[in-house]
Image (cartoon, rainbow, N blue to C red; front, side, top):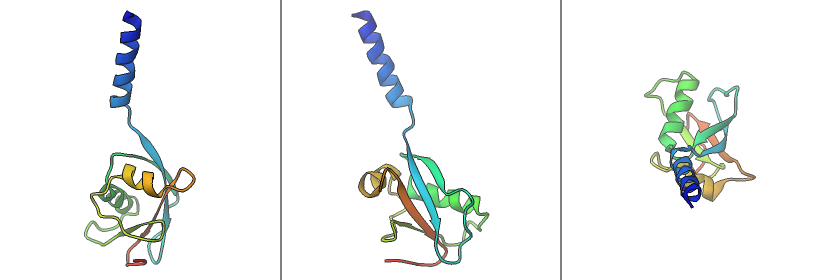
Length: 107
């Protein structure tokens, strides 16, 4: 009984302390530089804004320069959307696909 309670406590701690990451594919569109690495594991609790900021830093773009992020070539999610929600709704074959561009490309 005591070991069962200890195992439950460990499982709870692992679930709360563990970071859930999702597989994300970043593809360039238009006149934006292409990233050498396209597949990334991103914390599911991060927002779209954090992904945009990461791409700008990786590509050494100016922080004030616009960068558009599209989900599956269809729409531009708001910056406060959580990656987990987008993954749950729009992942294909276990991967969330983002297209990034410096100019508006779709919808």
